[in-house]
Length: 177
Length: 79
Image (tube, rainbow over all chains, first blue to last red; front, side, top):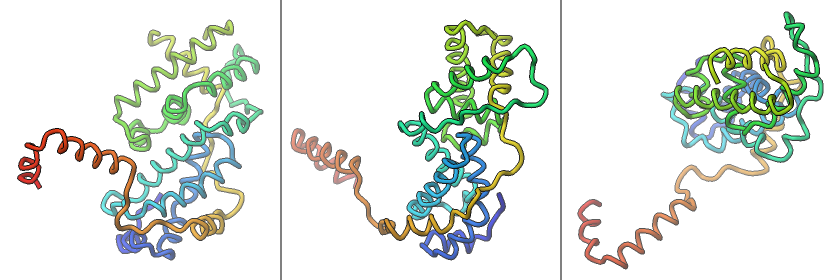
């Protein structure tokens, strides 16, 4: 994401749709990518990109230009993804095929990968988002904390709880990593 | 769960759910859909908005004042 002149940010805050479009053009790809990383479903990520920018426009009066647009947009996008994961719709829109990454451990079969992904999908959304961003996407802890609106220590705790629950779920299926 | 187990489960998770590569972009331009959403549900005016929390706070304040009238001067002092 790029930095934008403060005049554009101030105009956006005052409801100028042209300024909003300028910000949209600069940030929509990053917002889409962020949501895709959390949800892994391109169609849903596109819908939620629209939802995120609508929320951004609705909340423009609360925007503080000195804090920057990027982090604020990311936080609203994360919230939109969280709301989606909490909804019943999320269950039916998980990707069915799991791509096999390069350099995969041969001892880890497709079946184990599938069960792991399904078990991950059963985690509470707030743990799931923290784990996917911090562990899978390896995003900086500070960025994850800012996007979730929590401290770095809370991110660590959520990731730990997510991994512990995942391990327990897999163990109950006879998979012991 | 010790550090070894934590690292193993992290590796398994990374293999089950590989990271999204590159800089993906949407298949269509989302801007027209954003504009339609804005037109369909115009934003509330940026001025005064009243939430449920505000109502609960006011109700609590009224109840407090009704139960403890002696607190009125204290509130007035802090206004």
